[in-house]
Length: 526
Ligand SMILES: *Cc1c(COP(=O)(O)O)cnc(C)c1O
Image 1 (cartoon, rainbow, N blue to C red):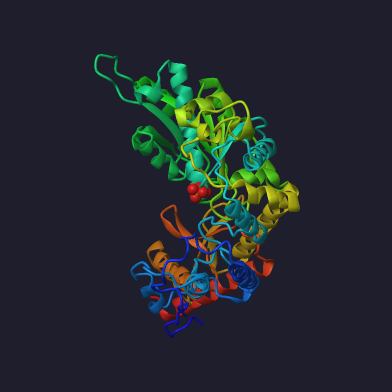
Image 2 (cartoon, rainbow, N blue to C red):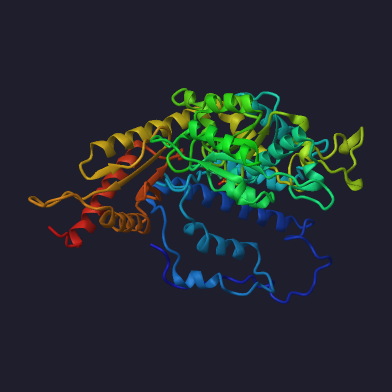
């Protein structure tokens, strides 16, 4: 149960208005054995608490509401005087630790949010402790990142590609699109880095650059168009078939019509694992089409790209290896703590051309610590970057990439188990194909005996919205939702390495129980 009393935060006696010490120090006095010892003890306690919390997750609610008194504490003004590390940790332990969204929990299935692994958590601690700046230069942490990039480039079928770790799939995709734009400009003899995408006085007007993806493409594609100055009109959405895959006949027709209208198509986005239903476009056909029409072929594989690691679903993403660029997350189906995504660009020279600026204060040298220069800074927008790759490198060394594949296979099998349970259940209706790790469905009450007619969407949408709210608020399980063909759907997006088969069965049972609870309470007209 959440605490109902306001927590008392002990104030360390020498914290407030203490006279300045011999020198101002960062957090603690490095010359004091006693302070090292108390920090060591605090660190061990934090670690013990965190591991114990993770161990106890199956018995805990997925989510619980923050008590008002704690919520109010987040409105307090900033501390003028410190309370010391122990008391500060106590605040974290009481008011933050129990009140996350629950995405580390075995029954969390919402929004394609990954769980994180305990080992990667520890690696992140080392990354933060060493605190290297990942702009580049001659240091082991940069070599770790280069190596992890090259491993994934090989495993995902793009050996030798240039790559960069970024915060998330959104940024990875945007970086790829920026490269695609440079590629297009090169072909057209336009200097898009200098001129942008606008016409300048006294020069011939430039035609708009446009790119394509299915209507199921993730919303990053609109954000990217806006941010790159192309305008959201530049992203042309192609309708999908009944399996939620891009209609290639319509794409061809759109390309031709747009060219006739004076637009310049430069890129097609294929999605490996759409966010709504886990559909994957026909990547082989898209690769062929892009080659034939000299278009940049980008694959958004935010979570789906890692299907390549599992023999169960590998064939779904064939064609991905022919992409000019590929974006994928490790913090979704790779179980790495946030933030951890990667962009791969086949043409390494172009990748650098898209972002390189040689500032005088960053000039590389031939030898010593600055040898090689700031090469990661030349592959993206960020200059200062954290050490994202260590946790992957360490987890891979511990488990091997085949283990990553086994987790993915396990999730696919569990999703198939869920789908079988939905399809067999008289009160559950599946709303979309479930080829990968996502299932969309809803609860449909049985009509009382003798009742006529089926439930309408107008009845089922609010019922399922209420059902999902109760499921989440009671901390029973955490799917999220979407809309499929205009119908409200409960959506299970499964990237959870902690889930057991029993958790999946529990989900189905709880949905049926809640559905009956709600349908029973609302007087259904007969
Ligand atoms: C999650 C997702 C994104 C965005 O990735 P983030 O890591 O959340 O920024 C893009 N595309 C697809 C298909 C996704 O599932």
